[in-house]
Length: 190
Length: 404
Image (tube, rainbow over all chains, first blue to last red; front, side):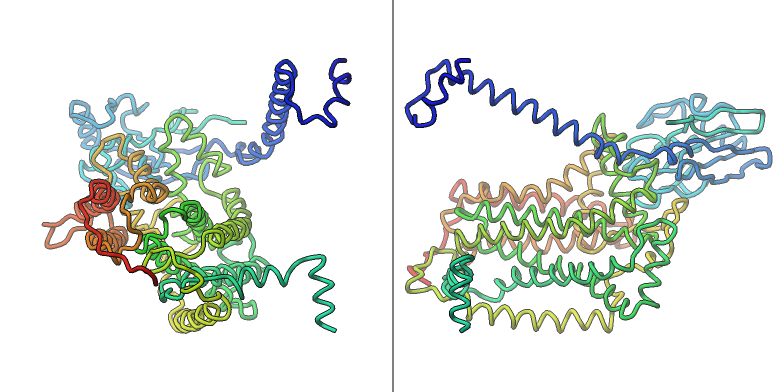
């Protein structure tokens, strides 16, 4: 009401506005800006969200593997979510080496038993935790484990980081044994 | 007739006035040397890149199943496709050469000093944009280096605390670098050059507001020591373009793969990393800085990323680090010495970055990682030292000339 009453005054008034009116103007500018900013953020969301994995990508979230044919000491690389996963049936020496590592000083401490469900089956996401290169197969690194050739990280027979720039152990992806020999890697997503 | 047409146009769009004030009557210092050629040369290369890129885009398909083959299709089947691609691939190399010389010229002659800070900042923004554009462009051929370069660089984001992991998945559009990543990188690689072009416009706007610096680094009296940009520097710049084209074409026609990696002619394979990942040469010094921070345990990765970004971002504060009353290093003996140490240091960093991380020299007596760490320290040391010798008047500048 009073805004309308003031309107003609404004049209030809370079005089300073009353403090009360200034407050109201500040409030209106602030409120309009806030609503505008919220609107822009809301409008931006679909665009930002469109970059997140799409439904068809999410549907590929799990991989099923039969490990019955794996001999002792044999390692296979299987694709899971477009990333390589190492599955190794460890020899007794490799298991022993991993157990021995439990008591060493580790950059990212973890017990071997926490990293495996069955002692002889080692499942590792084969992406170096430094910058995501694929480490070389078992036996290539110091400690009998895996060497990442990109920047020289060494992982042991439990996939734990022992030497080099990588900050963390090789990730053990979520997996379950569907039956004694069939392994399902990943969780259903989306 | 043509005069009256021009008058008609000028009354509506003052072209004549613009040409006069920005070229034929735009004053430039009369003592600019050949190091001043590289700004306009970079603009020329940008135009070549946009033109060849546009025509390449007409044949390219950003699809993980087709991208590698379609690049070979461009090379073998498309008329002059090989020429377009080699011009574009080598153009990136020469673009960075021109820009590096351009930046170093600015650093040597103090072109970043007042009143040219904003001009300088927009230059650094262009440099950042160029690096992003070049990186995404390199992914498009979808070879092994494309793929693993993309994997390594996008993984840098995962070093960011808390949100890093989700951020990387968001950038990938999947659980790893893949088809969605390629597709969006193509879209951005197409867009960014035009953004660069717009920022170049602002860069030149700022330049024309404050005018060119010059080798003496003093403010010239343009009445006495100024010459119009056209025809003098237009001719000189064109001469530079001619020389550049000789070198550029020599590579394009006779050694087109000199700067390219053989591994990128192997199709991308997410299951196998090449034995040795090297970025393009223009990223090598920064890559070496990234790798040289490996002594901070679990903080190494984040620290490496920060150091790498900081290596460029520190240029933003360079105008404030340099406290000397004199701009040009011509008259600053100490600054000049550390400048050349800095330049040599960048080359050594590049060499370290080119070699495998665990490489050694002299039968293992000299691990390159140690060289990398030392050179990283020297790299940042330059900026600290420049501040130190100028803030505490340790450097005694030589007397400046009264005029150009």
